[in-house]
Length: 357
Length: 158
Image (cartoon, each protein chain N blue to C red):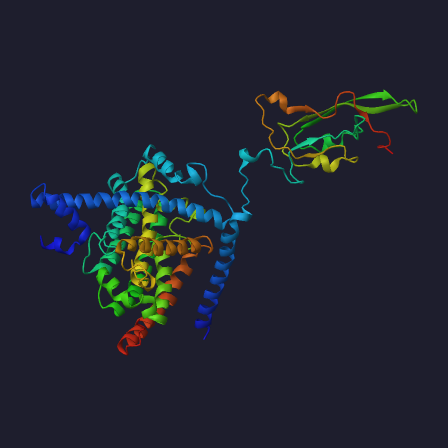
């Protein structure tokens, strides 16, 4: 059970409780299953409400009202949508590669749900505190693109294929910037483990500790992160005016819902990583609620939602980039700036010019 | 170095755009342009240029401006207007004179192009602003625009 030692409190609490009732082996497996189910339930609901938030925010940006018919203030709208999608027929093209076609949505949703396990929602609420946390996150988020490529390829549809190939180009390029900007911050923390990154930030959030290069890294991270989730202004993958719905053109019902939900959970993940690495995760500003650790969930979600809102703001402000502009932005601007930024950060850490409270 | 000034300009213009949409976001409560239609049908009023259907206004003496010249009928590309007319004897001059019997308007054929209203030399027909034009029976879409017993207003032809 050496691996279980890495897993932190939430798993342990449930496991201790279960050990009283059943043998240790069964207890640890059931504890894992229970934690997995809790996370699955929370993020099915969270994903649905992110969709609602997106629709409401989009409406306000466009001087509209947004969904307001199902439930008070439209709060049940996305629930109703999900129910509708569950009840729909699963269609497909005749010449589709059936196995890959059915596999693709699971790749996408599983990879985005796996990433959720490592986030420190609060001091005691982290399912899997692995010592290579950031590395794990970057690795897992790269798997999602395989699902998109599979979906586009196996649909046997030209629009889906073009969308998927664009997604491949885009995600592989922007992965570099996400990785390098996070690496800049790792220079400050000296650890990849998320709980330790949070620990370092008790002397001030990393965006303050690292001042100028940290702010540059944050800007690069947000741009590259938006591109990673295939959202506007980087939504080449599902450019509605050119490609129908892009890689998921041929999907319907629940399989489509998986892609859709995964997109929003990915947005949450990008914002949550930024919260953890730049804005002190569950730490409250100036430690005002330090005596109440469970309030960390509130701070974590609050900061994450602010960043999610920032990404929605991008989406409803900027026009879509052309594919060559997209690659110019990454390879000629973000990447060189990022490399220079790492050197600056290294010098700052070396000369001990960081700001600490 | 245009490289760095490009980055500066890029960030600046992006922030300008975001401030514009940000302002919209903050004022969206007051300025929402959405009409919650079936709920506000009592208060909803269409703007002046809205093309609901063609009507013929009558004054208090049940007189209209239509001389029966048929210019609207000729102008209509779909044939939605049919004018049934007759020659009657004018009381003042005693001469035979053209006057309308029925100005028939098929709303079901009309595309709201407005050519008839532009063609009308006496402004006898105008746009109405009503917008709930659906019916359960298509015969109700064929309308007679001049009211029964109405006649041409004196002096319009001069």
